[in-house]
Image (cartoon, rainbow, N blue to C red; front, side, top):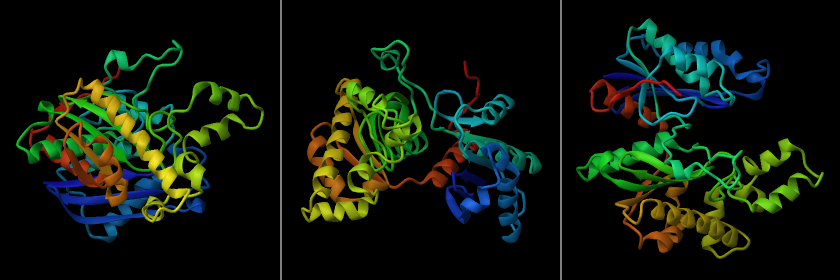
Length: 354
């Protein structure tokens, strides 16, 4: 099966051609600030991004002849996980999305290319996958409800791959999946559904290389009304300039972990504190699964760090077997989902948000 994968990021566009699960051609580029400066809204980048993709295909002499096109899911309305055929409701919601990001363009471009080569167009497990159990939604303030935003694509893909490796189906297992990246999400996967997970985007759970995680509410309120910071500045503290970046002035975990392994402060103290918050979140998800966890999967880029994995293992390995599946292979995960849909091994979902 020839599967074409599209993954637009805020400053990059990545594409790849897979034959089944094997990548046979990978391309893409970083888009400079000058390239994007003429666009005032991400939707205005549609033709620019599409033409960029078509030009790379043409330069590589790759015809528009695919069995499926799949894109990174955008910031849609909350929806259960799975593989989705792109439909008109999805197109409408991406064009009118409340949250602006280039990933919203992926499905739109995939749909147009798929129409030209008469094949299906899909997305899979967008960041807004929402399978939270009712008790996980409420907070102590009725106006504030917990939101499910996490690394759904990679978390679901590694879960399915792990299940297959032990001769099981994802829907048979209870898993705690720890995605360790610029943001950190820790989810309780109960028989194929993520019934609880921290909001890894804008202020909940562990702190991470760039995000603040959960902050004491009273102190955050005082900070917000201190007159020192604007709303935009406070939001940047929560997502972008929080976590390791705020404490150490860098988000390079490779360098920080090397210094920590040598006992150098403040690097060791801050990194160990971050990993402590991760371990606490694992414990919370263990309670969510009522102590019935088949495995704890460590994934994402930081899972390549021997130091970080060792520190985490010491704190969590008595709960369940710890499985290491490092990295974040978004392109491979998308191809995996498309192939599963084409073969009928993964059911095709219909995007129909409430």
